[in-house]
Length: 212
Image (cartoon, rainbow, N blue to C red; front, side, top):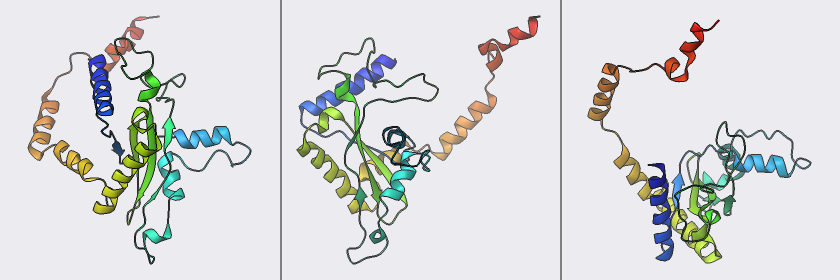
């Protein structure tokens, strides 16, 4: 199932790239520490460590703050960063960092290797809100400066028009919202569900009680 999910994602990205169509995602509540960790590692003699920001979102919230966001002759101003690339990722409790999608059995890349499917991203601060979003795109779709500018201008243009997240993201959130009726039904199902095996049984902890 996991291979099918990843393969489907890879084929969608490849198809969009062949058709010269953009692929972009907007993360509304990013909590990664990729940038903060990189600054701490690469500039230990130039910055005070540990850096006082707990994650990248807090760091860019302060770095992108602009007084004209709230007042000024030019009105609300969108602040944003340049494009960055996430070359490795380190999930919680992982032993080491790795390249996303690299070394997966059963997944065939048709447009280069796993490096082409890494995530490129930039941060943008939404005007009149204390909100920073992370805009992501596969590296293969933003290899040249023209593509990077095109995707960035498209997303920033929609942020400017809505004074919020792009319309497509807002519409997706609305479509994904669980109705009150479905929440109540799910709650009833969980309340009346009976466990077949307990967590301790699954982890083998109960066996310890029988050992001397």
